[in-house]
Length: 230
Image 1 (cartoon, rainbow, N blue to C red):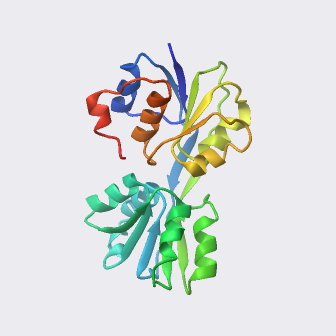
Image 2: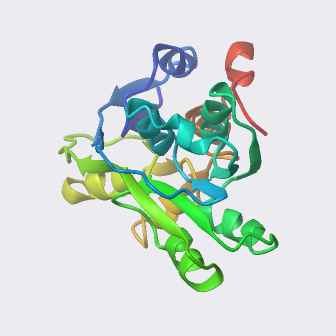
């Protein structure tokens, strides 16, 4: 029986997908997201999101109206879905921050507002600093690590963020486990710890689970397949 450790607690539906394939699952939340009280003043005509947590932070502060009339760009299908659910159209959805930057370079916007977390990659800020004028950013949430010593080995590890990778590595080595990652940025956080890395085709939990099943040549249920973004 294949054993898997997930660095994030999964939903009932996500867990059932794994259990239906006779996978033994151990899970723990190795990071925690805290929404911050942030004063949001000037919002430029073009807006960038790289995480659905930033969208949720705006919702929690009743600041969603700040997006009215803005052109929105984001990373990840789940982030786009959350924005769509709020009634906003997303002009461009990219699979990574680096891919989004390449798309933004082709546009005529000169100023952006980036809604982000306190812990973030430099990809978007560096682009804003060198390619645009009067751009700004707001830190809407904070990620706290909760490292945990895992006293056993697994066949596979599931990683959903660079912060979760960092948290896991504080107390745990990686030896023979295959590391299944939600995206390139998360995989990069593993550094040279392993070369056994599998990437999800799209940055969602469901696609990460599917990548795991595909690696072990297991078939997901039809319902699980319907949650997969190509």
